[in-house]
Image (cartoon, rainbow, N blue to C red):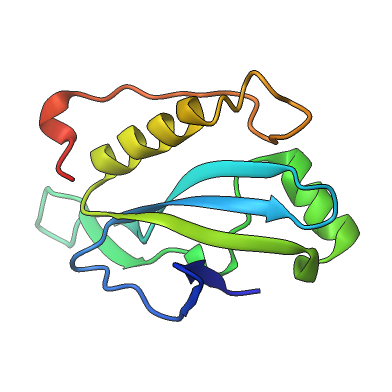
Length: 136
């Protein structure tokens, strides 16, 4: 199951521009949903080269193509019902992690995800965002 954005399949994301995205996953059997964010790049820290002091940071594409959220309950349902019974949508492409955190929290609160556990997999809203981090 591929990601969709405006009902169009997303095969590639330009990680030089977009550092993250906010998404919604919908269970097509019972209608429950999950809103989250995902970074498009991951960073691996390596020891410094001989004679150097700084650790090396190596960036690579994250596992966004195969990602199914941090919710254990949702991942369990995907395993039980099959990926074909879920829809993965990208709601917002984000220029940085701060914008992604802000838009994720905004979507979660607008949709009242904690108030309707029968409709949402989300069990927690967690964010700490400074206004200088938000560049939408």
